[in-house]
Length: 93
Image (cartoon, rainbow, N blue to C red; front, side, top):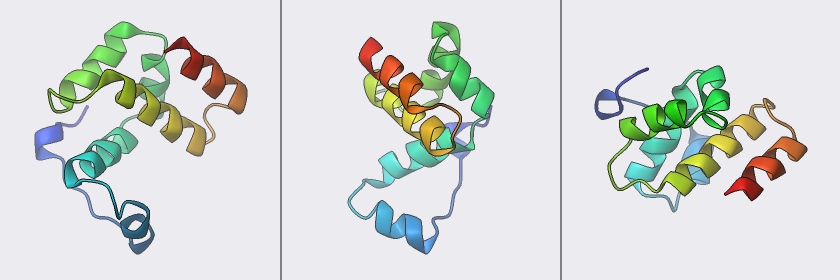
């Protein structure tokens, strides 16, 4: 897993418009999560060990619920989970 503190990214023009109202730190968190292996992201939904491993890479004050929501959105956007799975994990809290 890459290191969040050393993580570098560049936004496309489309992403610049999409993230126009996001803080730089939030964008970095999203881009970092998007860079992680899809299987790790997927397994983090069922494994607290894997979720904690991801969470520890992010800034200390990052809300775990936000992290889970971001992971779900990434997986859904990449078509790695369907609407039913998205709803299931969202309702789990």
